[in-house]
Image (tube, rainbow, N blue to C red):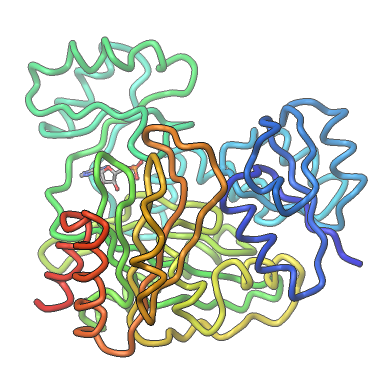
Length: 380
Ligand code: AMP
């Protein structure tokens, strides 16, 4: 009996546990919250990630450890890695936790990035703005997600307001200024690398965000083969350099035929949720296979798929369940503004069939605005 330990007990851990059940796996999930939603499907250990006693209990009960949450302190990941195999390795995790380390690595690997500059003081903010120019975004280096910890600087006159908003974070988590990219599209490549170095990717995915939070994903993205090949090549360079094991996502901006890397998520990723029903093997199943050293499954996709995120509260499931290619995922979370509480995936063998299904579902759910850009892309 193999037990996989997962640090973080949110929907990603929950979907990992669900996809591991057919492999006969057991799970132990660790989270700081007693109502973490993965706890509905796997034993939950409630504890702080810095608490050595809790980590020791966790390590003593699992055969291998992985993450549903990238902000587990790097020292805790290292402490665990001295006792039990941890994938991805703590070094890869540490790089992905820090926007500056991540962007520095992208540059080293010749992966284009928006211009950036680290900021520790108010004077450095001025220097960074002089280098990068406006518009740009001031971001926390660490602990930011879903657009949190970010301030848009439209003109240099916004510098004071930006410092007012985030300056206090400079000493705690560090700051970085990044050039604002007027992108045409946001794309992501979800990739997996096995313990033996085998590397696979799912088809390139296009993503739409609302208020910094993912709203919809479409796979395969409608992009030139050359763009898809470049994105996959960047993901491979990252995986090989960091000796990555497991699934990760590389988020990219597309503009004028060029790709710029935004960030790397060292875990299964929201833009890969469509793989549960839309691919021969899902990101969750392949992540588990990778960390356990099992053969990776085929990442081929089955037709076209669109994932719609449900934020705040779940809509009515019936219109989606009535769709032939409709699939429903309720994470069993309490509704809360801005919280990811579930998603749906709609799959069809042809692009136009998917567009029609999204039109019906969007109308029935009052979500026309959410599906509109996806439908436009499918028909464009
Ligand atoms: P992040 O947390 O860095 O992934 O940012 C969340 C979202 O904010 C991204 O998916 C983009 O939609 C937007 N964003 C972040 N950085 C930039 C940038 N440098 N230029 C334009 N938009 C950005």
